[in-house]
Length: 416
Image (cartoon, rainbow, N blue to C red; front, top):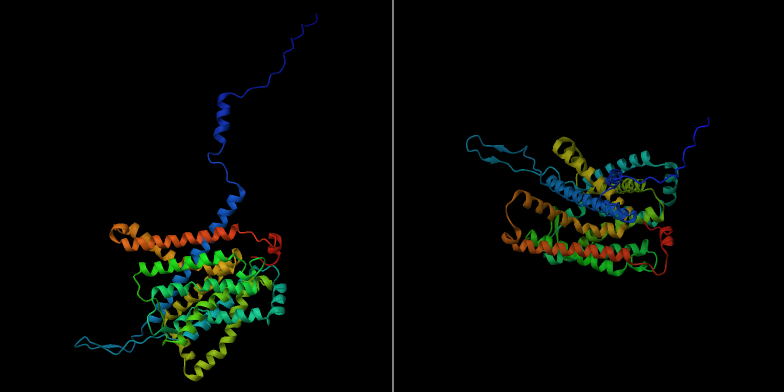
């Protein structure tokens, strides 16, 4: 007997039940992922902020340690009268050897950067051959010369004989920004804004105004009537203007020369830093010989005193390490942005100083600045306005399109 055939039942697509749909919904993220361009901009701004903050902290730390070094006193010749308790003798400053200390820094940085370049370079032989081909170019000469004169000890060699008002100080400290723009227009200018250093003139003007507001606000918050610190001879008149001009112009020029050597001469950044410091060390040997022969500085005594006192050689070692990190962060800013912005963003040093003060007030004090110190609160707001000007300058600079040269051509032409 043949079995009865089963009736045909058409297939119906299954509908997910309510619990399964709920599970799928819970698996989705609550916050949708950001677009890739937005995430890239956030990462870029984070890298820039960390680099600027690191440079400001290191420079601040470097100046503090150098002040401690020059204020150390040698009390080995001092005696105490056992009867009266009076101190007999005078304390001496064991370290006043500015040129010897600069030589230590050049040698330390040159060796450290040379080691890192050899370890991290993929083609050390090719890098060294390129260095030898361009060693005697004008750009290398400017780089080494400005590096020698832009060390932190140049301002320490002089102090003004007359007081410098905060307004004059703030205006003068903002001059390194147009200096960087002018130098960059001569060395790495490209596109329609070549004569303005590769940036629209509005950016330079806004950054100058922002730097003046930020620095002047710091002088008002700190209640300073005269802004200067130094350990050398007093200068006035033409000599003061010449030396002070070098203090302002030479560090900015050195930063632009760094970008020029890395971009135009295609030099490895670490090899550039190493060669710059080693050449500065060699150039400094005749300077030390002249200083020793003329009696300006006893080099051998400076070396012996540094090795004699643990406090001295530890401070010198820390200063060398700080200078190395400052140079590395400067090159990182140049590679991330360019030399103009690497110089311009140094005006954030007073902002970092003020933020440290605010953190101390908010966490360890019950004072309310707007009530207890309204003048300080006002100048803090003016500093915030300066920071907003920096943001406006950055937006204008990023949104301004070069009407002559396309982006691809600018990138191939050496834009960092």
